[in-house]
Image (tube, rainbow, N blue to C red; front, side):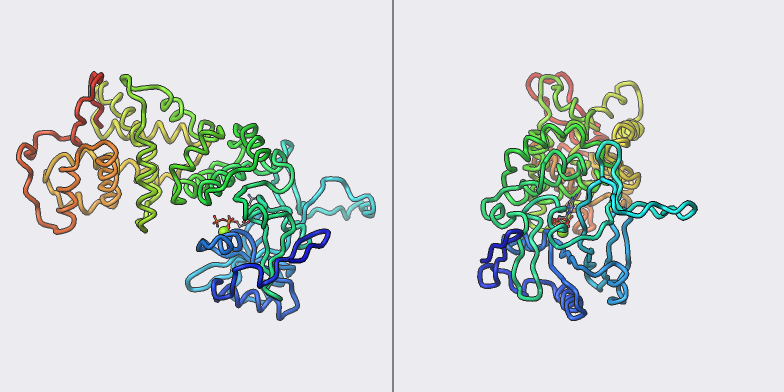
Length: 450
Ligand code: ATP
Ligand code: MG
């Protein structure tokens, strides 16, 4: 190990990353950049995960080559991004992001800059742009490797693997934090969370996923700035929420989100409902459902976005639909109204795409249909695009509540063999047109049903 004033070098023999662990496409990129006289590093989560013995989700490369130069060097290159200008290198089975080292910027005007000549003012868009309340809107200033490391979010995400000698460069103390399992922002945490509130969700995700603790000052700044999470754009928040809850550590992420005060600003209506009880019962299904999702992901089952949202908010939607039903609305229209209300409530905060909301609605509607076995045209139920997700929803419901297993088993058998299974005695077709009613729990006045 070597320690200079600005960085620490961890030599090849002092760390476990070998080239065999890195995707061949990424190695090719690193070598081509190097052979053309450029600095080329593997950076970000890839280095972090390899050091932790985890399989990286993707690999990112950082270089001193400008986007234009990268485009010239690689035929499979597409330049993307407005806020950050990036190169995407397309391969058959992966896309590798290659970014030019970015600088940290100050907003002070450059006093040595020549005065602008009237009629020849610089009308180009600014390379770095910050909103009045500190949000970074554009950030296209190139910098040194050290600048690039310092503008990353957390110390553990700022390590760089150098293709020249296979060493790791650490400009911000990331190695030490990685060894002690700590998520720490680079620089002042409050400033970094104001610049980009999504970093607060990323802190929670990495803490939950890696089993790390959030360093004290970082956590304090997160709690203080949590209401500001909604300053991030709704589509970006949607993407981050998906990443959080599909990370394989949804239950832990949910706990961290609530503890940090991030959950309520993102889902205010749902959060308020969670705090209330329904007929003396707390709403506990979400916790169990999130554990079920984690189990699915652990065994390699995919969980779609609509299934995730249905499992998170299903109980809330059911209750809202029930409210409409009690007013004489048909079961299907009641679900439509409940989903529409939820979408309206969420639209300014977390932008759930319309097609995803439609699929959530389908999942909920199929729960009503499942109670009829076989009912009319059962083969058309199987053909519905949301069928598999709806069945998984029902399976999770059974495991969370201990009810409805016979119905789930019937449809699972039917889906598998495409032959109508026998209906269990006491569950004849045509009687109950809803999902299996919940057994009345003590203290319950009426059982909710959709
Ligand atoms: P994963 O890919 O496993 O979700 P990651 O850390 O690789 O985690 P990416 O979103 O792929 O996350 O980003 C790659 C790297 O870019 C990060 O490791 C971090 O260094 C930097 N980065 C990403 N998002 C931000 C952000 N909001 N602010 C500062 N740096 C960021
Ligand atoms: Mg990544």
